[in-house]
Structure formats: structure tokens, C-alpha cells
Length: 185
Image (cartoon, rainbow, N blue to C red; front, side):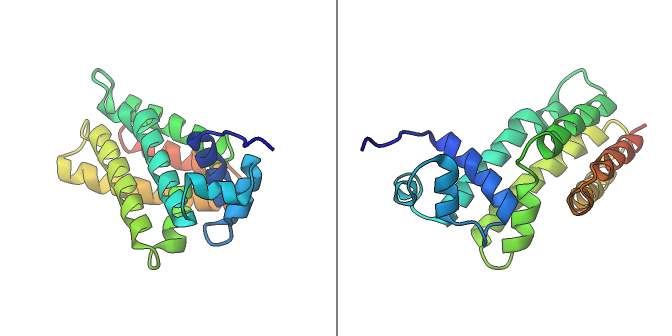
């Protein structure tokens, strides 16, 4: 039987879906292999452990946000409001319009005390998110106040994601993004 060739990116996308659905501890390499259409043993050819796979997923999500969301904060010629609006729309697409969910918050809460390597990667993601929001808020606030507001916004967005998932109601996220925008008007 010939071996099925799949890309690491495909595996990471499937793993992200499985981790988002089942959580880190409840997802198995067999679950991810099945989602990829390969045998469990083949997964270890790509990633030697579930922990290594999760680290790669976290890095991929962070890279995506840097490239597709956070970069708006550094766009020359955009107002602070436009920066926030563009970041908000891109974040909403990630959180609502696909099956990926907010893996950083979920995995962070689930594994914070048990797997420090995950916590460090997740902290870097949140640091970049806060920095991007701070950059947008500099259009209205001092640097210190802009960072405070950015930290508050990330906390509120993460809480809204939780409420959205619990109630299966995207309104929580939409309302939060409107409140974030009001902070710069």
C-alpha cells in the first residue's frame, strides 16, 4: 500500500480543529491522524509527540495573527479607529467564520500550570496582540494608558469568546468589538 503524502500545514490545520473541538488533553494523535486520513503511526513521522504537534499549532496560529491581524496596527496612514476596525474584522473571521476557534485562550487555560512551554508560546502571542492594540490606541492615549486599554480589551475579547462559545451566540463578540472601537472615538 503506498504511503499518503500530506503537508505539515494540512496536519496543523486538522490538529487545530481537533484541539479546538476536544481540548489538548482529550484529543489524541489517533484523532488527528484520522482527521488527516492517515494512520496514527504516520503522525509520528511528522511530529514525534502530541506536545510537539501542539507547539507547532500554537506557532502557526501566532504566525497567522501576526500576518493577517496584528499587522494592521502598524499600517502607515490608517487612523487608530481604522486599525482597530481592521484587526477586529480579521479576528472575527478567525473566531466566527471557521472551525478554528480561539485555541490560545483555551489551551492556555487548560495547560498553563502543567506545560510551561505552551504557556511561553501563548504569552508571546498575547504580548504581540497587546502591542498591536497599544499601537492603535496611541492615536488617542499616552503610551502607558494605551497599553492599559489594550490589556483590558484583550481580556474582554477573551471573555466574550468564552461567552460566545457557551451561549453559541456571536453577539457577545460583536458587542465587545463595538465597545473596543468606542474606546478610540
